[in-house]
Length: 487
Image (tube, rainbow, N blue to C red):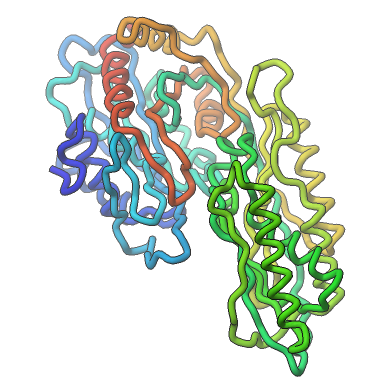
């Protein structure tokens, strides 16, 4: 039984979820959790297969009387986005996530929780471990590195899955069935760091923006949340008109699919301008609080003393960088003309990192229309290149085209109505799901995605609703019991 979550229902799901949280699993570093899952499969004498990348499939025969049903694959990814509050000491490579219960929600202490997508993996493990749940021939597919580019699904072995139906448990809205998603791609830029000596008779400061909500760039991008990176660059742009500061470093964001919550810039100012820059940040703090008081209650701009850097950017590089960032698009570009309340195309100005030789920038574009995705990526490329950056772009991933005639969708709708006396929401989403890539690898795969309520994923405010987790579990069991016959 889990130490913290063991009293929650369904017990086995929460036990496995809490066990997952004990094994660090950042994107690209999931080996500790993967080793635990592989050991668990061997202990239970399940059939285990892996592809070259390390994606895991675990198989279990059908329960008696279910042998002639279509085989099903329950799928989730085992990596998580690693975000923490600036005042929290935490090592995602080695420390266990610390969950706690807050009313009807499970949260983590100062970090992302990893319910995205640990809860889906936990449900798959709980079904596999059962002795009293009717199910057809069953697989669980645990993919790697979903959060930083869908790498696991992109490199999924074509002979790994035997199922005809795939149930993805990576959706985040109770009562909704997802049958389609946007495609996406990343655009990265590298500005060569051109350095000058630190001016004499000067003082160094760290300027910061904190307290933004952040969130998932595919789920919350429509919500009009502040981007801390855009806001700190705005301060640099506006302040530079009156105060001749020198920029040493700028850092913000953590992942391509997370809206930056915090941003930091190290600047050097002449001793004579110290009071002026402090006044400027105080005025800017007041300005953004007034602009964002409804949406971002905790937003703050501030300044603190810093050690003197070893170098600063040349004025030419600094000016080009700030102008380039100011021109960088961020947010919703276009809503769907066909589906109400669906974002069609967007971009996320996601990450800036100052390194020894470069300023590295990462952005992410999404669209359910391939040509608009490319157009959005070209806008971002133009903003980067205008600042002198070298640009690279990934191939991206395809959209998952909705199929309203899906047999598993019909089964799931019938089960949902029988359970709750109402129709579920049928939707396509702007966030990326692995289903598009899995469907590309396995043509004809009948796919459906659903899950419990998750809020503020990809931020330390991430939380999962306990009551809807039980509903999701019961729905999954009902669907498995009623999977259509083969042929």
